[in-house]
Length: 331
Image 1 (cartoon, rainbow, N blue to C red):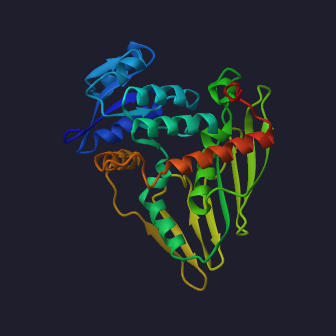
Image 2: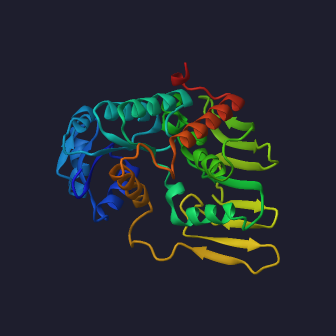
């Protein structure tokens, strides 16, 4: 690896564009190639972001010797196939969330990365957000005492036709893997893997979840009340309640710019991350952490550990089991 980490972007959707714009704002990174299933889509993306090479197949991208790290930005139904292809070609991988469709696929990816000695990380930008990192530090230092309840939700109402990917079981459709992964991951960040899981949901005629509520429980006595929806407008907020106070995260808790710390008997404190890079979305923190870890010779990030991603996938599997959602890939 040279002075700059050289990225290859696999897929050309909206999230790939946002990530690419953030990476291009970093002084020690560059995007050298992009791939899509069609060369026309890849070329349009490359022209828009001034990327040198555009490929009409994933195989061409992972075979490019100038690419150090592949960013997988496909729908999650293709994460396993795309990340596996990149790892087998000897590339480090940053893979969007939800990490895979199920925990079996996630385990296979982790095993492959470890076998090849390559870096692999789920692109859970929430864990790398400076505000969230400060929040976790305060919680672990006892700022609000022992956690008793985590509340988090993520939802919006959309007019999705039956053929839309969010309604298609083969594409991992439903609210849970697209949106529910955020509140579930937030609860895991603070409390670890739950000991008990309950859930209920409204399902579509195709069999994917449209509106899901989850109750997670830990032997410590802590609980998490979580929800996700593609048929209801949620505040997309979070609250962490402890024995000596609470922390309130505003709308878009998954990439906040501040939170309010309310200690018992004290005035509320608003805590921010300070001024950040102008014009960047927050995905740049993923690229920065990947570069740091790869240069340090680490096979995974301590901030987004692979065991944590596996645990989240186990919880998502359990929720789907409770609500009766199955994907063809589960067979």
